[in-house]
Image (cartoon, rainbow, N blue to C red; front, side, top):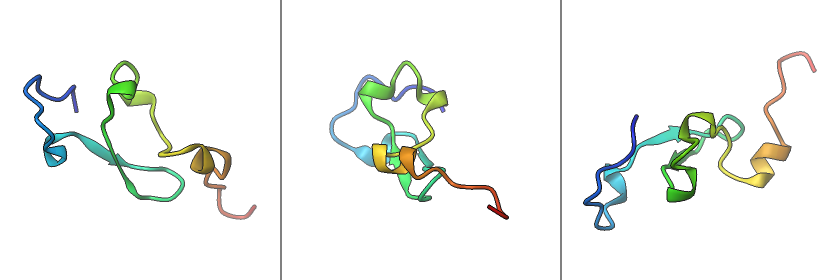
Length: 57
């Protein structure tokens, strides 16, 4: 999932996406995440603070 094409004209369906590890909702690529898209795991600060806990805890 590389960077989106330079000819982006508001069509968000053409952008790459992946699920949030905490809530499972799809996250669309954002320009702010361009340099570290592979490390982005959570869609928001709320999900980051409520990280998924392993079973049994």
